[in-house]
Amino acid sequence: MLLRSIASMSLLNVAKAAAALLISVGIAARVAPAEFGLVAFAVPLMALLTLLTDLGLSSAIVRHPALDRRQAGAVLSLLGGAGAVGGALLALGAARLEQALQLPGLTPVLQGFACITALSIWATAPRALLERGLAYPRIAGVEAVALLGGLAVFAGALQVQAGVMALVLYHATLQALRAALFTALAWPLFQRSLGWGRIAELLQVGGWVLAGNLLSFAARNADRLLIAPVLGATALGLYGLAYQFMTIPLVLLSWPVSGVLLSALSRLRQDPTAQRDVTAAVLTGTATLALPLTAYLMLLAPAVLAQVYAARWAGLSTLVVMLAPAGLMQSLAVYCSSVLLEAGRHRLNFLLGLLWGGGLTATFALSVHAGLQTLTLSYALVSSAISALMLGVMCRSAGFSARRFARCLLPGSAAALTGAAAGLATLGWAAGRPAAPWLASAAFVAGALAGCALLRARLLDSGRALVRARLAPST
Image (tube, rainbow, N blue to C red; front, side, top):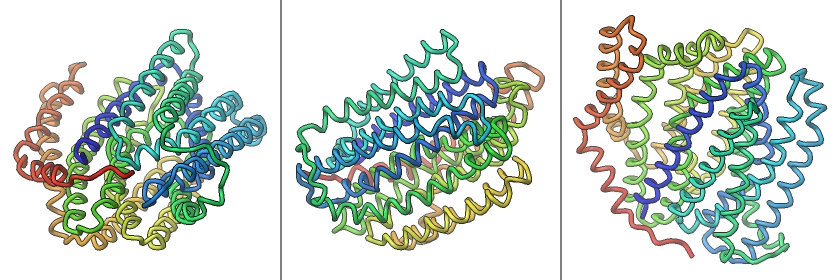
C-alpha cells in the first residue's frame, strides 16, 4: 500500500510540475515579467492566509490516533468559517495594497485569489481525512481531475487573450474542483458539528505545526514580499519564474511524499527498523530525481531558456543556475519535519523552523537593497547551509549513519554524472544548430537513465523496503 501511495502521489505531482512549466511557458510568451510578478506576489499572500486559517490542523488530523466523526465535523466547520473570513479580508484590502506597494493591476489579481484562498482552505480538512486513511489513490484522482479542469479553463482563457488573469482562472477552477470532490469523498467520515471545544487536543498539536509552518512560510516567501516593493514587479517576475524551476523536485516529489512518510512512520511506530528502511527508501528515490535535475538546470537549461524566453526575460538563466543547488538541498531536508514530528520532537522541529524562517528572512532583508542577483546568491548559500544542518538532525533522529545517507545518494549521483557527460558532449557536437539545446537535453535524459541502470540494485532495494511496509488504513 505504501509503494502504491507514493507512486500515485508522485505520478500526480509529475503531472502537476509539468503543467506548471507549461503554464509558465504559455504565460511568459504573452506577458511581460512585471505582469508575471503580480501573480508571484499574490500567491504568497494566499499561502499566508491559508496557513493562518489552517491552524496546523491538517497535520494534526493525519497523526491523531482516534479521531471521531464529530471532531472531524468540528474541524471542517472551523476551517470553512476561517477560510471565508480570510478570503474576505484579502478582497477588501486588495485596492489598498495596490496603492501602498505601487503595483498597478494588483487589485483584480488579489480579488481573484481571495476566492481561491477560501476554496483552498475548505478543501484542507476533507483531504486530510482521506490522507489519514491512506486513501492516496483517491486523493491523486481528485487532484488529477482538478488539474485537468484548471488546465482546460487556462487554455480557454489564453485563447481569449486574458493575459495574467488566465493564471487566476486556472487556480480558481483547480481549487473549486478540489473543494467539491474532496468534500464528497470524505462526507461519510465526518458529522456536522460546531463543537470546537472537542478539538482542543488537535489544536494543541496543530499549534506547534502552525508555528513551524509560519516560519517555513517566512523563509520561502519573504523574498517575494520584499522584492516587489523594493526592486519592482519586473524583478519579482524574473525571480518568481526562476524560483519555480528551483522547486521542481520539491513539488514533484518531496512535498507530497513527506505527507505519505509522516503517515507511514506513524503506522510503523512499533518497528524502528522498518521506519529507518522506509525513510532511507524515500531519500534514495528523491535524490535519484533531484540530483540529475539539478545538474540539468545548472549545465543545460540556460541554453533552452535562452531559446524559449528570448531577450524579454534576460537574466533568468543566471538566477536558475544560482538557485538549483538550493532546491536540491531543500528537496532532501524537507523530510526532517516528518521524522521529528513522528518522534514527538515538536519543540526541536519548531526550533529548526525558527532558524530556517528567521535566518532566511534576515538574509532577504539585508541583501534586497543590493540587487536581485545578490539576494538570490545570498538565499542560495544560507538556505543550503541550514538544509545541511536539518539533514544532520534528521539522520541522527532516524538512526542513520553518514555512510547510509551517502548510499542513498549514489544512484542519483551516478545519474547526474552520466547525464551531464552525455548532454555536454552532445551540446558541443551540435554547437551552432538551432536544435542543439534540445538534442543535448535528450542525450542528458538518456545518460541519466543509463546511470540509474548501473545502480538499479540499490533502487530495487528501496522499492522492496516500501513494498515490505504493509500498512493497515486508519479507521
